[in-house]
Structure formats: structure tokens, C-alpha cells
Length: 390
Image (cartoon, rainbow, N blue to C red; front, side, top):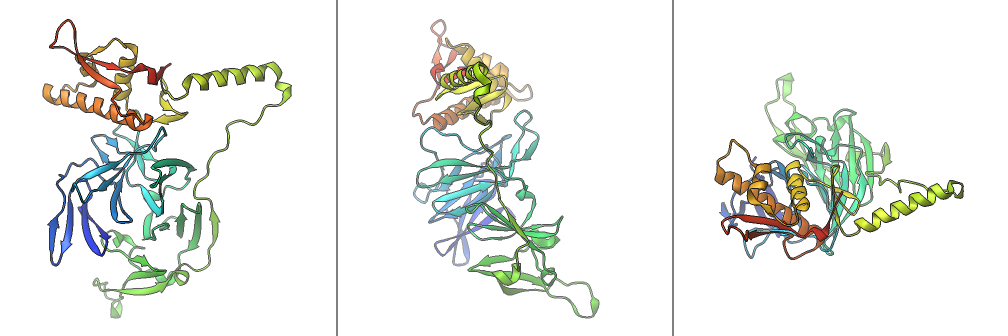
């Protein structure tokens, strides 16, 4: 199914899964609402409603993942970005994200992210975060041991999600706002419920107002093969789940990496503290670039190898870097020159966008200039004061 239905203000919208297109159901017709296009840069993003606004988070496109929210503006009829406020670290981009809402917070967890070295490979993302929609600030919550994006969603309850774990088998009620994962036995009387078997991708049970609307297969008489007849059964929340088997934290945040050192460490401990403090002082309010990667406020940033190589080239040459030097790092011999220039320009634009969002700046840190020796040659320079090169 290419479109996701979203109910908003008693109106049904259909949002394209890959990004861009928005349709509204008016009587018996679908009416196009957007001035966008099917850009395919938010494939497998998570689409949700928040108050009177349709949002989407994350998604995949052009060998990279989005790490921000966008919203559909009914004024511009375009998808606009929701930019965080102030200097803060943001989650690593991902797709197939699990999202719940407990106003003013939006919780995200699980999903998959691209490998930092090889963008053709991906791995589960086990970080849990929440975004304060009023303050526009991210907060890291901790590590999630379970890979929820591989489980079947039985019901989305706004601030909670009920999953089916096929391997146990059991049901898991994930509640990010309370930081709980509650486990329930899968009850035999509901085994014919659609959403708990292999046809769950075609049909769906759902939940509303403390009641499950269970789409149930109707057995055929005489032992004949099932002919596809189904009905909805209304089952109260407690009756469907029964008594819980147990409860665990949904996510855990690691404690401080070291305990207070004792006096017996003496001079060695004092030296260690001095070196640690000096390093923190030098790195304050700066983006640190080293062979191990790029980080800010002690948190690693998700940079692909080409972007980091261009960043290091600019920092090693504060007097300026020729456009061709950057093209040499990003050029793909299978693409024509015009396409390679477009790739280079997009990479520079992406770097500027990330640094402006991260450092809460208005101006671009990477700018282009004409060479004083030959006006036909373009130079790129970076404001090195915001970086620390190791």
C-alpha cells in the first residue's frame, strides 16, 4: 500500500509513504492537497498526527536517513521541517521508527539506521529519545534491549503500543512515557484474530477507547478451507490481555562511566582529572573531528565517510579549498559531470544544514568564494572556530 491513512479533525487524509503527496477524502473523491512531489527522501518514515497537524519522522532516501520531524503545512501546502532550538545533540537518523505521543512529548525508539561506514548496510537502532514539541528540544532516554521494529504491532494506543512476539509467543505492551515493557501471555481464544497471524499485513485489528476491535476469521463449517469470511469482535482491554506475566524497563540509561576515585589513587588520580578537565575545556561548544569520527557534546554524530573527508579537507586548509578538490572526494565515475557537481553541492548543503541546526546558527559555516587569481575558479572556506580537529 503506497499511502498511509491519517484521521485529522474528522477528516481522512492519505499520505504517500515515500514523501510528498497528500490527498484528502471529500465525499467520494480524493482531492490532492499538496504542492509537493514524490521526492522519495522519506521512505518508511513514521507518519503520525499531533494535535491538529500531520507529522512524519525519519525515513530513508539517497543512502541516508532523516533525523528530524517534518509537518504538512496547510498554509504553504508543503512539508516543512521542525528545527530543534539551541545547541543540542539530536538522534541518529533512522527508518521504521516506533513513535508514541504523550503531549507535549513525542517518544521515538527502535527502527534501523545505516552503517556509518557502509551505507549499503543497516543495523537495529536501540536508542530511545523524546522530543518536547513545546520547547523543541531532544532528550536521550537510554538503550532499548528489544528490537521492536521487527515485532508485529497489534494495536497503537497513542502513548503505548501493543506488540506480538512470535518467538515466545507473548504480547508486549510498550509504554515509553512510563518506561515500562509489560508482558502478557498470548491467549488461545484469540488465535484466530487477524493481526496475530500471517495475513496481518493485509488486514488489521485496532484499538480505541479501552476496547479492542478484533478482526476475527470465521471458521467454515465441515472443516472446509477458510474462505476469507471475517467479523469484528469487541473485547475490553483487560479481558483481551489478562493478568501480566511481568514488567521490565523499556529502556535503561547507563550511569556515569566511572565512580569517584578514592584518595589512595593520589597524584595519578589528580593528573587524570586534570587531563580530563582540560580535554573537556578545549572541546566545549565545538564539533570535534578526529579519525574516530565526528562528535559534539561527547555524543557521536552520524557522518558518512565522504562528508567527513570533505569536512577534514576544509579544516586542514582554512585558506580555502578548490571546488575540484571536493569533487575528487565525492566524484562517481559512473555519473556525468553535471550530476557529480549536483552531488557535491548537495553534500555541502547537507553539512551546512546539520551544523546550523546543531549549533543554533543562522549563517552557513561553509561558504564559496571566487579565487583572487582566477575568477572562474570557486573556493570553499569553513569557519574553523566552531571545530576542533584532532
